[in-house]
Length: 567
Image (tube, rainbow, N blue to C red; front, side, top):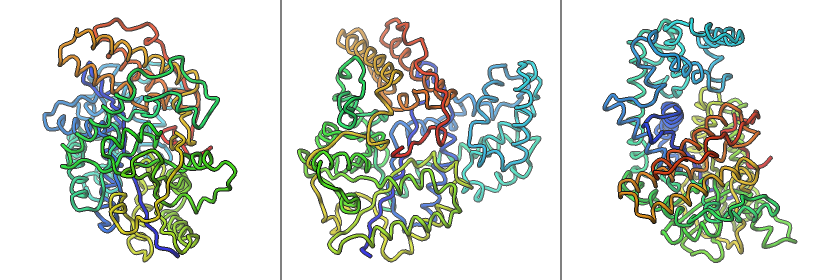
């Protein structure tokens, strides 16, 4: 078989859950993923120092991790669920706080994160019995001890497998199982603080050693091609229905703002500008690549569907053979030769994201290796394949036994010892002698890593409505800024709020195919962000912003947090 270069890119992202008006975190996902997934991913790399990967942290996620670190330092917790974990007397909390515990502490994949723990399962069964009786007073009778045990088990279930193996206090608390005291809760609370505060330094150390490359994403994770031009959605879906507004006002300059801010943030945190950019949702267009080129990006990446659509446009009558076109670097015609594009293998990426969770860890790791080997066997003598496996680095693991511990351990072990597979990073590959099989893509069809289109974020009633609301808010922003009514500090605050409104995440969750509870949360977050923006602009909030956009009602795979590349 031909030697293989393998790039594993783990994308870490959460939108900004902070309410800029109150300073409170509205959802706990940043700190929960920090103590489970970001911690475990660092651990596996530390245990396998010869494995090289790319870690893509979005700047807005890193901001929030640092925010939590500061909260622990100053002992001023602005996350209500985390604050409740450390509250001395849970018998004295108000009804809204009790409701928050009930609504939050069963949100997980029950198969892997609740059912394996008998005491946690019993707490859930008690809750189900009382909830089915549909009497609010029944839940009010649950004691402070019940609430303490529930808070403890929820947070214990969200600790990473590496934490359980390395921290004796976690194993002891899990063995105790019930009747957790305030002292017990503070033990776990303090450990959470320790894990979060150590997180960025661990990844910085891995980067300094050369084991990982740290890449970035435009700051608040905007769907950049759509900010630049809504009609880019028609590259891959000619009949898609677009919002009434033809373009997002000043979209290109907004994308540049997100990109430049991300690069400056990366330089400040890690001592160097990033060489590469993973665009939010793997979404690219020719106009976006032009922005990347202008700002000195050396590489970017997207997905196989985007590459296939682009090749079909240039060669409509040619039968394309996957092994011949996918596993090579590309330059895009019309873009600078200094920007190199890579496209992920959707099958292998989705196997990790969705399928291997159902396998034994060793079997899954061996199957992955065999799949890589098969690509090497199918390569021609003059080819030097580079395989890109790119996926969400946080949401998949709660569907694996033990948070993917055995799969990742076995996968990294097999890769470390494989004679023909070399894990690498894009920056290392580009500067090596192996980067020779460069191809030119005659034309680029805009698209993303979901279906090769933008249909997840635009094109139906709910998402188009959201874009209309955002466009109206941006028009108001522009008028107020041009008027000179705001002080410099007020302008900065308003732009920060606008940036959060521009995140792709709000649009991801809108639609009938997503779960109602999550749709309601993200719909409300989006509209609260818009309302806060109008407040910062000293304008009344339009009535349309107060009405729900979407209601959900679906039951998608993986709870909707991830989607396969194709249906």
